[in-house]
Image (cartoon, rainbow, N blue to C red):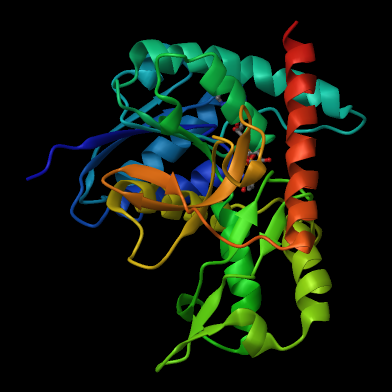
Length: 331
Ligand code: NAI
C-alpha cells in the first residue's frame, strides 16, 4: 500500500473547507488509491466548529483517510505536510477598504509562509485559494524563499471550469468535450477568459469553439463578463460565496499538478511569471499550463491577437498594482 500523503487545509472551519475536506478524503484530489492524512488549521475562535468538522470526518468512515489533525497551532498544522491548500483568510467586512483587507491577509500569508518553510516537507506544493489569491501566493513565495517558486501557485481553475461550463451550456455539449480555454491574469474581475484556442470534441473531430459558437459578439462580450462576474452572481443567488465549486476546482488543480494533465489538454494555474507572453516577471499570473512528473510548464507559442493582448496587459497591470499595495501594507 502507498504511504499516506499529508495535506493541510487552512481555514478548514469555513465554508470551502467544509466542502473540500470530504472531497480530499474520498480521493478526489490525489486519486482513488492514495491514502491521505488531513491537517486542518483554523483560528482559535473557530476551534469548536473545527472540532465538529473533525467529528464528521471520523463519522464518514472514509477508507482512504488515515488521520485527521484539527488545530489552531500553525506549527503543528504545517508539520511534514506534502500539499498545502491555503483557504484561510480574512473576509472583507462592510465598510472596509481594499487596503485594509489586503493588509490583514498579507500579514497572515507572511506568517504562514515562515511556518511552511520551517515545518512542511521540503518539496511541499502550495495552492493558495484565499483572496486576493494571486497576491497572497506572491507574499507566501517571497517570505518562504527556500520553497522552490515552482511549488507556489494560486487557484484560477474555478474560473477555468466556469468558462468550460459556459461554453458547454451555450453549445449544448458535454463539459468534458470542451477543452483548452485559458484564464489569463488575476483571480478578479479583470481576469481574461480566452476561448481563441479552445476546442470541442464533436465525436469525429476537434472543432474550434469560435467556429461552433459562430457569434463573436457573445464570445467577446457576454461570455467574458459572465465568467468574470460569476462569483458575484453566486453570492447574489446563494447569499454566500462559491464553495462546492471552489473546493472541486482546488481538487482539480492539485490532481492535475500531481498526476499530470491529459495529453493535448492544458489547464489554467496562477504561477510565478517568467516573462512568458510579455507578462512582467515577479507577479503570480494565471497562464495555460500542462503538467507532467509533478511539474507545471507554461504552454508556449500561442498566437495572441490585439484584443487578447490588451486584456492580458490590463489584468497584469492590476497585479503589479496589487503587489505594490501589498508591499506598502508590509512596511
Ligand atoms: P469562510 O470565511 O467561510 O472561511 C475562511 C476561514 O478562514 C474561516 O473559518 C476563518 O476562521 C479562517 N481563518 C481566518 N484567518 C485564518 C488564519 N490566520 N489561519 C487559518 N484560518 C484562518 O470563507 P470561504 O467561503 O471558505 O472562502 C475562503 C477564501 O477563499 C476567501 O478568501 C474567498 O474569497 C476565497 N475564494 C477564492 C476562490 C478562488 O477561486 N480563488 C473562490 C472562492 C472563494
